[in-house]
Length: 570
Image 1 (cartoon, rainbow, N blue to C red):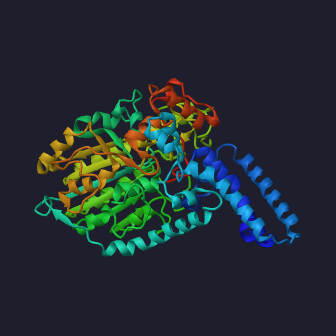
Image 2 (cartoon, rainbow, N blue to C red):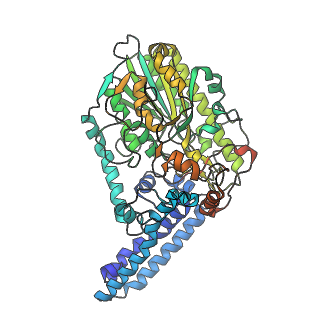
Image 3 (tube, one colour):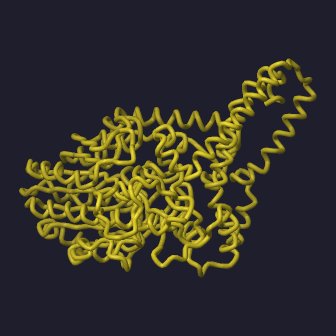
């Protein structure tokens, strides 16, 4: 900055904010292996002290003291600098700028503009592969390189954050004028009521559901209903953070730009245009109708209900509080209905997601005990609280099915969470989500249908049954939901309707971390132990800096991981 401005007075004012933010940027890169960016600033802007302190961890007070000490040092340095008023010569400025560019070179290598790792990956070096997908969060190119560097990329990141917010606010107006190309093939001729329900879970991983084979009976009611259900064994989320994962699930945005500008609406608008009455019921917070990608999609519905406070406090409404509004909708006996139930599921703090005293797995972390996703001292209690939240989710989803059964409608339900959760699995040194962990992407996908729906869509039900073991992606949810209502989308999508006649498995791309099967499943911190020694060493070296590389407790089960700023808060 001194080289660019050439004047001490200007350099001082530019350097001060950069110096203040530098420790936070360093901490973020240290924890997550990627630079911060617009998605991080958006999450911070929509969060509160409780959530931020959870992200920082149990040492938040110490880190706050260190932050104050750093602030004091910066203020002192600025004050001492204030007395000087020198001006650099042109030659000195050129030399300083050249030195600064040399400092940028290693950042460029790390972030993917000049990336020799690409060649190493092509040659099959597993260690390089892990580093590449741990460090790189965006495609290569000069723009991405510049944005990822610090502090030079700060203006670009802030501009993109402002663009995302502006795009969200424009979305409702733009999407209202867009018309999907739809063909109704099975619902217009129905005399009976047709109801399609999507239950969006939160931070729920498949391998801890007893319905998916977990030894602990976390989902007893759904397990008892298993003959009535379709259970997709190999489903993955499109992202490990809520805002991006739900956007990829419910829109046709590409995985490389899930929050970018797009003129068309979500699947909610598509159902509206097909003549359905649409509802969005949520126990998650509402930050304003046009503030976040999720609230923007919710605003497309005819009717919306947010049962929790808008500021995302830890103790929100319990998911079963969605059942009475759903029942009231079913009592209306409207001919065609699409309902989204957006739940809190297993969002941290896990103990806040189920009623007091309903704790089949003990000892469990209590509401007054802050969860620690950075250290394993109380991992057993953390995991038990997580499994208790799954047990409550099981009861809630079973309640949704019960209401649909008793409604007399031709009804169909789909359950899928936004992403999973990591609990110090494998070599993962922390818990939560928002990073490249298998547990953050391998999620349950469960479907149920009434006997009337199965009779009306018999061939479709048979095709879905035959694909329960196939690899599927959340990117297929958009066309699949329409297909459940007998609506065909005539414009193409990247992933085909799972119930379509000519469906075939495809690649499963994710936001930020590459293809799930080629990248995450082989290079993540909780990748199978059978991976090559080089990959294992790479994982430990890269993510093991915080210690605690393995979870050996018998109750730790199959795995969850760490809540990053990218996705801790939805």
